[in-house]
Image 1 (cartoon, helix red, strand yellow):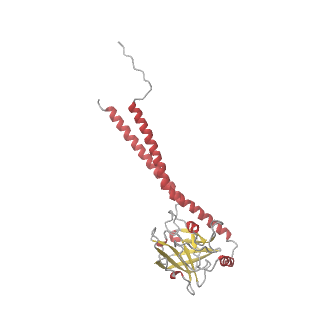
Image 2: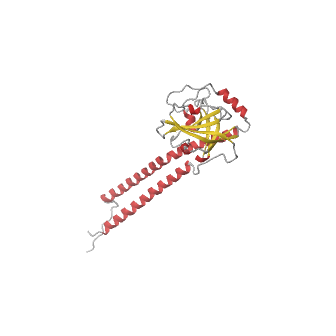
Image 3: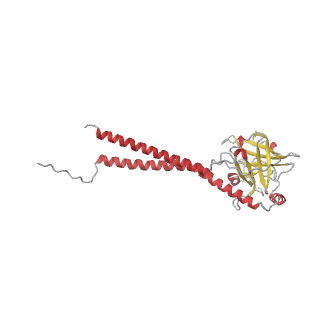
Length: 294
């Protein structure tokens, strides 16, 4: 007597359906984890890249606008816009009275009045007129009440910048500067060189190191310290020296976008490797289960 083969109904056994459903859920979960990891790990670098683009555009626009501008024109514009002010801490949380030479970012775009290049930090940043929140979020601000960028004996310009702001560099690496290091200012197509001769850490109320000195040409770079605590101010002062032509524009090598791409690729490859390892493990486990004697 022949035994008839039982026809398959095309339906999976409940246990197989459950395993397939679980595998689909696991795949979706891994996909979500991959996307969230990529977004959270690359967002700071994408944000940094956007700022780099803004700064590059500001630098290029400033260079174009300075081709036919003289120092005399710059000084006339500076003093026409400036009001009589005394030097004060730019990072103070106390509300400040708006000055006539402070950028009104709600009504006009930021005004780039110069560029600063710091070779040791591999940075070239735009300098904005004033220390409004938007100015310091996008670059370096010229402190109200300090001297102009044209320099000269008896002048002391104060440039302020944030540290650790949403991972934007700005003045984050300023503590790396040592006595003898140089930085450069570009204003009206001319480059002025300064050499660091004094580094001080002071309370926000101690402003005596920002005052003008007769017969001296100073520029002081100011930022908050310690990082994220911001209880003190780091003052890095430089005195004017002779400028010997060199490459003014500095770059830190790999851009923030490049870093973001590398991190994203690393995360993707890592997740793929984990998925392959998991697939091979469960495949081997299933094969061993089928070969096990019943």
